[in-house]
Length: 190
Image 1 (cartoon, one colour):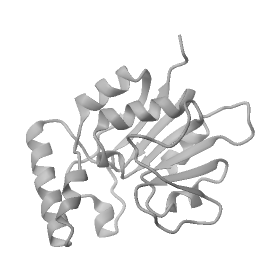
Image 2: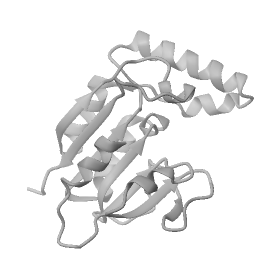
Image 3: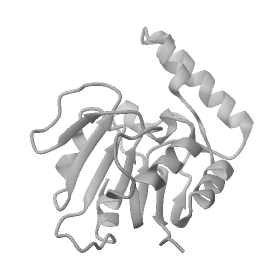
Image 4: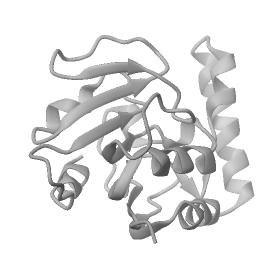
Protein backbone atom coordinates (compact mmCIF):
# COMPACT_ATOMS: atom_id res chain seq x y z
CA UNK A 1 0.00 0.00 0.00
CA UNK A 2 2.89 2.36 0.72
CA UNK A 3 4.02 2.05 -2.91
CA UNK A 4 0.56 3.01 -4.14
CA UNK A 5 0.43 6.03 -1.84
CA UNK A 6 3.90 7.02 -3.05
CA UNK A 7 2.52 6.95 -6.60
CA UNK A 8 0.10 9.69 -5.55
CA UNK A 9 3.08 11.98 -5.04
CA UNK A 10 3.66 11.64 -8.80
CA UNK A 11 0.26 13.16 -9.56
CA UNK A 12 0.47 16.89 -10.04
CA UNK A 13 -2.70 18.81 -10.77
CA UNK A 14 -3.75 22.43 -10.80
CA UNK A 15 -6.07 21.66 -7.91
CA UNK A 16 -4.96 21.36 -4.33
CA UNK A 17 -6.26 17.78 -3.89
CA UNK A 18 -6.26 15.14 -6.61
CA UNK A 19 -9.26 12.83 -7.06
CA UNK A 20 -8.38 9.21 -6.24
CA UNK A 21 -10.78 6.41 -7.28
CA UNK A 22 -10.60 3.32 -5.10
CA UNK A 23 -12.09 0.84 -7.59
CA UNK A 24 -13.34 -2.46 -6.18
CA UNK A 25 -12.99 -0.85 -2.78
CA UNK A 26 -14.96 -3.22 -0.60
CA UNK A 27 -15.58 -1.14 2.52
CA UNK A 28 -13.27 1.67 1.42
CA UNK A 29 -10.47 0.63 3.78
CA UNK A 30 -7.71 2.07 1.54
CA UNK A 31 -8.88 5.63 2.21
CA UNK A 32 -7.24 5.62 5.63
CA UNK A 33 -3.87 5.47 3.85
CA UNK A 34 -4.70 8.18 1.32
CA UNK A 35 -4.56 11.47 3.15
CA UNK A 36 -3.79 14.04 0.45
CA UNK A 37 -6.59 13.30 -2.01
CA UNK A 38 -10.36 13.25 -2.32
CA UNK A 39 -11.28 9.55 -2.36
CA UNK A 40 -14.25 8.04 -4.16
CA UNK A 41 -14.75 4.38 -3.21
CA UNK A 42 -16.49 2.37 -5.94
CA UNK A 43 -17.72 -1.19 -5.55
CA UNK A 44 -20.59 -3.45 -6.62
CA UNK A 45 -21.47 -4.19 -3.02
CA UNK A 46 -22.90 -1.71 -0.58
CA UNK A 47 -20.50 -1.99 2.34
CA UNK A 48 -20.03 0.48 5.19
CA UNK A 49 -17.17 2.91 4.65
CA UNK A 50 -15.37 5.66 6.57
CA UNK A 51 -17.27 8.96 6.80
CA UNK A 52 -14.59 10.89 4.88
CA UNK A 53 -15.03 8.69 1.79
CA UNK A 54 -17.60 9.28 -0.91
CA UNK A 55 -19.08 5.81 -1.44
CA UNK A 56 -20.56 4.94 -4.84
CA UNK A 57 -22.02 1.66 -6.03
CA UNK A 58 -20.72 0.86 -9.48
CA UNK A 59 -19.13 -1.63 -11.82
CA UNK A 60 -15.45 -1.16 -12.73
CA UNK A 61 -16.37 -1.89 -16.35
CA UNK A 62 -18.83 1.05 -16.42
CA UNK A 63 -17.71 3.58 -13.83
CA UNK A 64 -20.42 6.08 -12.86
CA UNK A 65 -18.23 9.12 -13.64
CA UNK A 66 -17.79 11.57 -16.46
CA UNK A 67 -14.81 11.40 -18.80
CA UNK A 68 -11.52 12.85 -17.51
CA UNK A 69 -12.65 13.47 -13.92
CA UNK A 70 -10.05 11.60 -11.83
CA UNK A 71 -6.31 11.69 -11.25
CA UNK A 72 -5.75 8.13 -9.98
CA UNK A 73 -7.60 4.88 -10.68
CA UNK A 74 -6.54 2.54 -7.87
CA UNK A 75 -7.23 -1.21 -7.74
CA UNK A 76 -6.29 -2.96 -4.47
CA UNK A 77 -6.62 -6.72 -5.03
CA UNK A 78 -9.51 -6.02 -7.38
CA UNK A 79 -8.32 -5.68 -10.98
CA UNK A 80 -8.91 -9.41 -11.51
CA UNK A 81 -12.66 -9.08 -10.84
CA UNK A 82 -13.38 -7.88 -14.39
CA UNK A 83 -11.89 -8.62 -17.78
CA UNK A 84 -8.62 -6.70 -17.75
CA UNK A 85 -9.11 -4.94 -21.08
CA UNK A 86 -12.52 -3.61 -20.05
CA UNK A 87 -11.31 -2.34 -16.67
CA UNK A 88 -8.23 -0.65 -18.17
CA UNK A 89 -10.20 1.07 -20.95
CA UNK A 90 -12.74 2.33 -18.45
CA UNK A 91 -10.00 3.63 -16.16
CA UNK A 92 -8.50 5.48 -19.14
CA UNK A 93 -11.89 7.04 -19.89
CA UNK A 94 -12.32 8.56 -16.42
CA UNK A 95 -8.69 9.62 -15.94
CA UNK A 96 -7.42 13.06 -16.84
CA UNK A 97 -4.43 13.12 -19.21
CA UNK A 98 -1.36 12.35 -17.11
CA UNK A 99 -3.47 10.42 -14.59
CA UNK A 100 -2.28 7.15 -13.07
CA UNK A 101 -3.67 3.68 -12.95
CA UNK A 102 -2.23 1.82 -9.95
CA UNK A 103 -2.99 -1.82 -9.17
CA UNK A 104 -1.62 -3.87 -6.28
CA UNK A 105 -2.09 -7.48 -5.21
CA UNK A 106 -4.03 -8.73 -8.24
CA UNK A 107 -2.47 -12.02 -9.31
CA UNK A 108 -0.88 -12.02 -12.78
CA UNK A 109 0.08 -15.05 -14.85
CA UNK A 110 2.38 -15.61 -17.83
CA UNK A 111 0.50 -18.48 -19.47
CA UNK A 112 -2.96 -19.98 -19.96
CA UNK A 113 -2.10 -23.07 -17.92
CA UNK A 114 -1.33 -21.00 -14.82
CA UNK A 115 -4.49 -18.96 -15.40
CA UNK A 116 -6.61 -22.12 -15.65
CA UNK A 117 -5.12 -23.45 -12.42
CA UNK A 118 -5.89 -20.13 -10.70
CA UNK A 119 -9.48 -20.24 -11.93
CA UNK A 120 -9.80 -23.76 -10.55
CA UNK A 121 -8.47 -22.66 -7.15
CA UNK A 122 -10.82 -19.69 -7.16
CA UNK A 123 -13.84 -21.86 -8.01
CA UNK A 124 -12.95 -24.30 -5.22
CA UNK A 125 -12.47 -21.44 -2.75
CA UNK A 126 -15.84 -19.83 -3.51
CA UNK A 127 -17.63 -23.20 -3.50
CA UNK A 128 -16.16 -24.03 -0.07
CA UNK A 129 -17.18 -20.58 1.17
CA UNK A 130 -20.76 -21.23 0.04
CA UNK A 131 -20.76 -18.75 -2.85
CA UNK A 132 -19.99 -20.81 -5.98
CA UNK A 133 -21.47 -18.16 -8.31
CA UNK A 134 -18.77 -15.68 -7.32
CA UNK A 135 -16.16 -17.69 -9.24
CA UNK A 136 -17.56 -16.30 -12.51
CA UNK A 137 -16.30 -12.85 -11.46
CA UNK A 138 -12.68 -13.99 -11.20
CA UNK A 139 -10.58 -13.19 -14.29
CA UNK A 140 -6.92 -14.24 -13.95
CA UNK A 141 -4.73 -11.53 -15.43
CA UNK A 142 -2.60 -12.51 -18.39
CA UNK A 143 0.49 -10.28 -18.34
CA UNK A 144 0.77 -9.96 -22.13
CA UNK A 145 -2.95 -9.09 -22.41
CA UNK A 146 -2.53 -6.51 -19.65
CA UNK A 147 0.38 -4.89 -21.50
CA UNK A 148 -1.66 -4.87 -24.72
CA UNK A 149 -4.68 -3.31 -22.97
CA UNK A 150 -2.48 -0.60 -21.47
CA UNK A 151 -1.02 0.20 -24.90
CA UNK A 152 -4.46 0.34 -26.56
CA UNK A 153 -5.74 2.62 -23.79
CA UNK A 154 -2.78 4.99 -24.33
CA UNK A 155 -0.86 4.34 -21.10
CA UNK A 156 2.89 4.51 -20.55
CA UNK A 157 3.85 1.67 -18.21
CA UNK A 158 6.02 3.08 -15.43
CA UNK A 159 6.25 -0.17 -13.49
CA UNK A 160 4.82 -3.65 -13.87
CA UNK A 161 5.82 -6.31 -11.33
CA UNK A 162 4.05 -9.59 -11.91
CA UNK A 163 4.61 -10.77 -8.39
CA UNK A 164 4.56 -14.38 -7.38
CA UNK A 165 1.53 -16.23 -8.70
CA UNK A 166 -0.44 -18.57 -6.50
CA UNK A 167 -2.35 -18.22 -3.28
CA UNK A 168 -2.44 -14.62 -2.12
CA UNK A 169 -0.67 -14.08 1.18
CA UNK A 170 -3.24 -11.51 2.30
CA UNK A 171 -5.82 -14.32 2.47
CA UNK A 172 -3.68 -15.81 5.22
CA UNK A 173 -3.23 -12.45 6.94
CA UNK A 174 0.37 -11.95 5.77
CA UNK A 175 1.89 -9.31 3.54
CA UNK A 176 3.40 -10.90 0.46
CA UNK A 177 6.94 -9.75 -0.27
CA UNK A 178 6.52 -10.31 -3.99
CA UNK A 179 3.08 -8.85 -4.67
CA UNK A 180 2.04 -7.66 -8.09
CA UNK A 181 2.22 -3.95 -8.77
CA UNK A 182 1.21 -1.84 -11.75
CA UNK A 183 1.75 1.86 -12.24
CA UNK A 184 0.98 3.43 -15.62
CA UNK A 185 0.43 7.03 -16.72
CA UNK A 186 -2.22 8.05 -19.23
CA UNK A 187 -0.52 9.85 -22.09
CA UNK A 188 -1.65 13.40 -22.86
CA UNK A 189 -4.08 13.66 -25.77
CA UNK A 190 -2.16 14.05 -29.00
